[in-house]
Image (cartoon, rainbow, N blue to C red; front, side):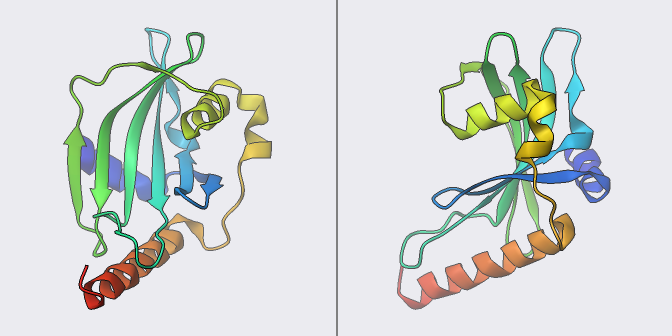
Length: 157
């Protein structure tokens, strides 16, 4: 049920391109999904599109969308759910029922997420508009991963 709601909502969401690390890839945050909970945490969806180097093993997915929960005052973060999408757009859901809130280390992707979520005035400086929109980006990401996997397969990896 969560997956169905998420997948249909992804098309109507407002995905902000927020972070790019050449080693890790691109990170998007669905600003429409940011919601405070009664227990003082904030839940939101993020999308990670990994990058690959030729000749190195590729991830088994083209991109993943993860539900995060952050405790702003305590600088804690948990990821209770991830949905991975393959090169054809097929999805598989993985719930982490025992997901624990963990300390956020400085200068990490988690620190970036904490700043974006917990310091909303900084969001305009942290987000970049995408020319092709999220659907165009995801189409390109699946194509890119398909090419990387074909290259690896051709090299016997």
